[in-house]
Image (cartoon, rainbow, N blue to C red; front, side, top):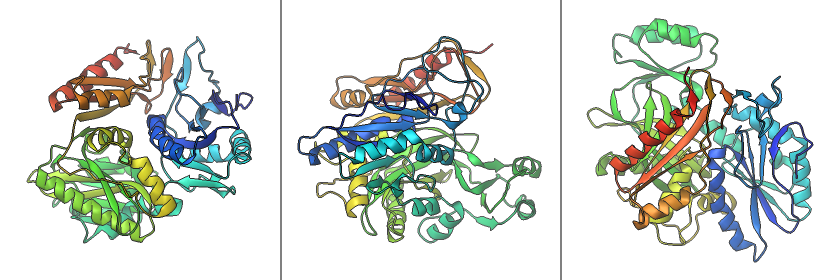
Length: 472
């Protein structure tokens, strides 16, 4: 098996077969199965040669129910508490979430990965690497024959900068009142002068932030001072607007004209800025969904003119009086990209290209396939919701929930009426683990014929996860 003698490879079950055509996925385990759609696309082009994918992930579990996986996690590999899959003693200091730059750097420099790339390229003309997020630290594409399927790394990095986002989107979509500043001293000065006027709170974000990291909703200068210690760079200062919804739109850019809108979901946000999941379809009005589509279409075309090709998302809020405001662009796949694929697969005619195929054509041919078909903004065939169960204090797991590999089947059964509700629990870290704060213990997807049944599934599955934790 590849990587068995490599100390940096924490787990591997991949054995190379020269008769198989491979591509790599590099990202988080939660998007492992999205590669099945790209696999099916490439299989049609291979004329009989079997296509498989290798997932290179950083997630640490007590066991892995995936084929062809390599696990690389610098935090664990460099820890004094060495990690071994299937060990019987408690696993110490598990932290799945490491920085994407650290992970991509480790993958790009790993000798086993580099040897594997060279070996594969001896038997196929190119090696596609499908990325969850395109960032500069991924350097495998410097090897001749390697092509990244995802947005250009420089453009993706630039598109995720909150300062440039607000400058580029100004005039395209509604923005809350905002300011920019270049240091903490100016940040404190500006916010102090705005407190009385912006009395519902002030949102602060570093140039780069995601899922609540490097951003905060503040209600006092003391709170801001505590948060800003050690922070550097440019800041976005925005008026916090009380709101009833946090909709997010998933889309794909093929060129400066063609933007595919996958749909509108509602984010589950805790503490003002911490993303923990999504529900679909959005409960926004039909008119609001139409506007969200229009804004995202225009933003996608703007990204297309800059050369961006691939999947992106836009987050918005809908205020208490029904007004829409742009929040941010996410120049990468969203955590719910896979669920959108499963949902679209059931809602669109058989054979319609899914998001990975759209992204593949956007990157390699600057267009969408001829049979592309977009779902109406107000159409859906099922309700689904996701929840990321993160621990905020150190926990010890006393039980485990087997990883469910049949999520795609659950969507099919709901859409066809075979079931009215179902849920799956995914990526539970396992039993006898000491889990550090900030770790995702497990993930939940609930799918049902109604919103009420979907929410019931989310609640029940979260309670099951809680039962695997020692709360003492």
